[in-house]
Length: 247
Image (cartoon, rainbow, N blue to C red):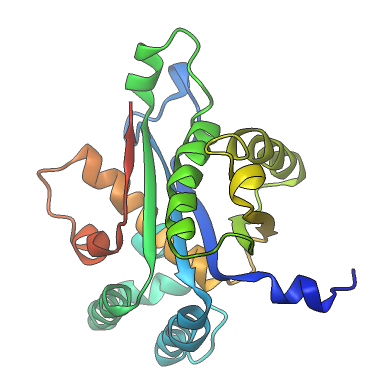
């Protein structure tokens, strides 16, 4: 594809990264330990992303592993698997890494729009409950769109980056995005923000997707166990612009 000057000049000032925690299963297959679905929308200014956020994550990876091919997956960090096995051998390294990661997540400038679906309540409330992922997608993009409109992004092209979940799943998501998000508040037709879907491989090492992943599960756990100390949420809660918990 050849990009014209007019195409490049219409790129917006922000990027959107979307990642989930929990599955979207309903019925008897609801996970008893994590009966919620969280879709985290991370919105970041491109200059902040390229000049500060990506370098900060790269420096962190180089400091502890000597290269930048490490992907920060919340589950692997928590379970101490893959590159994070060293935490079992060197507890002091683990504590130092967490301190550095917390500082990075707390000081960088980004915006969070979490959507949480309580699947049990959702199922009990409706005779034909909607697909949790699609419902969360609609709620999240509605809020993200209002934020971008306030940042004078009308008329711009904004990329929305999702982690690829497979060819079939990606196609279904693209259809759901077009059907739901074009009608939430009249995005495409009324406000003229052109959202471009981008599907990134799990191995793409996208800093934005890693940040969304690092924040999604802690947000869900904070809902399930509000009385429990949640250091991760304490660190990034100031980044939450608006959240939605449903129903």
